[in-house]
Image 1 (cartoon, rainbow, N blue to C red):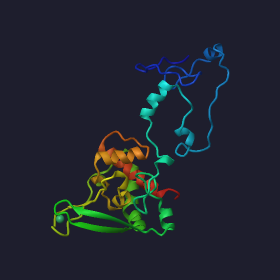
Image 2: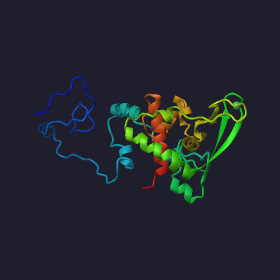
Image 3: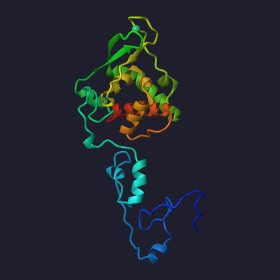
Length: 239
Ligand SMILES: [Zn+2]
């Protein structure tokens, strides 16, 4: 016999003729048969959940259910979202970077970015060697962060080690210059510089939204998604 529905599970519009009016349930066998429902349709797919396109465009569902799903489903980049990459190392979708393998193949080995003193406004252009900086600083941190499995940014991410200002001497005064338009943000530079933690909630939520992860929640969680998301993008096509 079926267990009674847990308290508080409210009825929903049934997504298929064979489904029950509560989430993740089906009607008893006798019921659909009595209503003349003798066949069930579904889709098979050999791809993983990350790459499968059909998972992103589910089967047709009643309009009242579609409404509530649309609100919850994260926005995923689509071809119509393409933008001119703001840097040679940026992807052609908002808030993305190109994989390391692709960058190396294109001869892009140096990543540049700008820092600015928050007291005297002195500017400094900083260049990182992509591969060595990633292997020495970013990847070990990525492995450590993954080990926690807490979906929260670690202290080193939350409290970046900013450089001292070479002009006025203000300690930890040099902050990355963050582009006015969010699509122009130099994500890869800040990842290598270890200063993603300087970004505010709005910008971190923008990254999450653009990359299909939860954009609600605390700042440390958003920062965690931005950091790990960028690492995963860089390590794509790598084993
Ligand atoms: Zn200064």
